Amino acid sequence: MFSFFRNRRRRKLLAERPLKPELWNQVLEQHPILTRLTEAERASLRDLTTLFLAEKQFETVQGLELDEVQKASIAVQACLPILHLGLDWYQGWRTLILTPREFKEKRRDPDGALVHEYDEELGGEVMELGPVFLSWRDIEDSGWGDGYNVVIHEMAHKLDLRSGDYDGCPPLHRGMSYQEWGQSFRQAYEDLRRKVTRLGKRAEKALAIDPYAATDPAEFFAVCSEYFFEDAKVLFREYPEVYRQLALFYRQDPIGAKAAEG
Ligand SMILES: [Zn+2]
Image (cartoon, rainbow, N blue to C red; front, top):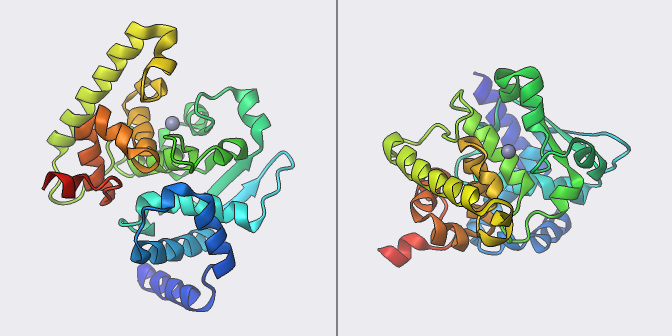
């Protein structure tokens, strides 16, 4: 029953108050990672962005102020991973807490996202339903197609947590194999860990994938998701099996690998 009312409310909102065309065009122009999308995909991304803005709550701290373009920028990047999954994958949490850069510097979180510290303080279960922390400074660096995207990173954690565990494996679709997923990710993760250990301080400059991914399997999944949407060629070159699994999960194929292989 709940979903019936929710769907009706969503349809009404999309019919009556879709994201304004000027705002939408501005957001599209600002994010090179969206240029690959088809017209139909853009239309459904616009719907998702409209709903995300209506259903999620944006809270700011430390004097940060966000205008509608900034909010739409966050929303559109958050919705890119669920473009072919649907907004219900983000059910169970509502709040995004936005901080200016100071927050990150004070806490020195490696990827600018404070969700991990939240995890340490309050435990994994709360985290599943808890807010997402993002620093605006890091959001500004996201969406340019260079492999870094803090919004996608945190959304990947939310998707991962839908399985109940924070382990780098979200609930997989019918037809996907947990065994294949596990094998592809484990091999790639172990490969990266070996390289990071061997290279030490030089790892960041020498490796194509951010060494932060070697922290644990959950971070590996989140960082690989960033590359998948930001710089998929790099991910495909380094870890093609991981790329394939992510293509199956996200139901997207940013570099057209399927066509090239088939
Ligand atoms: Zn993370």
